[in-house]
Image 1 (cartoon, rainbow, N blue to C red):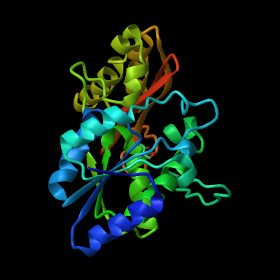
Image 2 (image 1 turned 120 degrees about the vertical axis):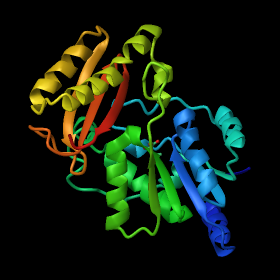
Image 3 (image 1 turned 135 degrees about the vertical axis):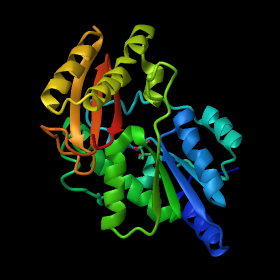
Length: 282
Ligand code: PAF
């Protein structure tokens, strides 16, 4: 497994892989890898000749007062996990080589970034779109893999790929969950035992929305109130948002009529968790 830190070096390496006729699968990550990431890598491993993984805690997608400094990092542990899934190349750049002095170009995806996590974390998706565009330019992968847990991010990345004519396929894979339903996330490691126990309510509330829709309820406000009540019953949970949205536009819906995204963002102390499920047309 090759470990590369410099953008110019990964660019040359990927170019020579492509020129040799091999396909590249990219899994972009911020490290502290868990089973969710590894499931993306296993898929990328079988669908491509060369598996490239990037590990970069991207400063531009964290706002003032967010958890950039405390975001979990474990490069040595990650390298062991990457050997285990058969990664070929790891790109782990320093922040200064991705954003050198006088760096001034950012990618903004309009509209779909204005609500849900975009409303709570202004500038977040500008940072994500910028770094993802840079990674795609550096590596020119044939396929790139993302998890459904960050559903809005996958919609933003698909929009970016279509709008900027990137020649690659985006694959979105299901969320991997703990036995109690909690979506795997690097941030779970920061929960206290009490917070961790209560955090299972995110998935329970999402499943509740699905059951209510399957059972015939069509009024979003009724379902949302029930979800909020479930979450608020956990004393350490602070709701950021609870939403029922059109799964394509991500706009909030009043009546459930088509495929719906149920999405939640909840803080436990300093740790903000997100989760979602897609509910097919009732
Ligand atoms: O989902 C993540 O880990 C990050 O947002 C990503 C896509 C690697 C960009 O920094």
